Image (cartoon, rainbow, N blue to C red; front, side, top):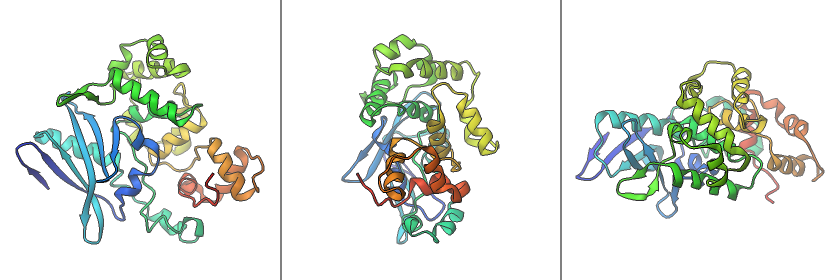
Length: 306
């Protein structure tokens, strides 16, 4: 359903039930990374999107109620959108919120595990995504070997320095395109954007995408088995085992766990009385979950909250 007033386009998108807008938005830290922002009081997620036409618009996303539970998402923008732009927004938002993903097999398995008792009731499973897989790969590289506050800062620097601005408010910008980042240099990304050792990785990634050598968006629909898809992700400079597992989660492949220092801490306190553990112990803890290994880890009700 699409409605208009003089300034606004409104779209309502259905989701495969069960669906919780709150659960997907808060599934991980992406909501804190530009050009996402969350308006806490209204629980509205905003995102600046550059359309294929080159136009930059602000999307405001919130629950679209259906009966007693949210049935999808309501999308508003202060622009009158063409039919082509409407279709693009529907496709982008559908991907970002994983509206079509089916988690019923995971929920069936989770009913037997008290530590996952909440997942079906809270419609957990969906992981917030960016509008493009290029953006998700860049952001994931920016999470490696650093503090979360630094990831927020580096992402904000990229957007501020290289993103296309919103006409109504030029201080706000969309995520930069591969073309824009390819036109800069690794030295500038290191010194001015302060990306550190990640600068040449991100510049090379953008250059390969811009040249047509690498089609990152094709990863979304790849039919490769997950281990083979993982191998392709690991070929990207700056993407190691942790980053590849994180990206597989974003792609809806849950066979691998994004193991980092947080994973060691959680598994240590859950099963090893706080004693040091390594990747083998993390893998062993969730091995029985098979294709749902990453989901079980991601939404586990950990007893340790430190």
